[in-house]
Image (cartoon, rainbow, N blue to C red):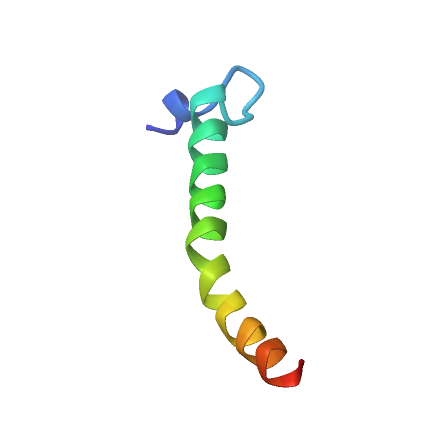
Length: 47
């Protein structure tokens, strides 16, 4: 199983790296609004 996820040097292949990058970007995009809502509310009350 691991042989298909790694290249000859034992590093992750391009497909695994792209999948991981997409997962990270997706998590950032999904969690950014949750983080921004309290900040926007605080700023709107303050100014």
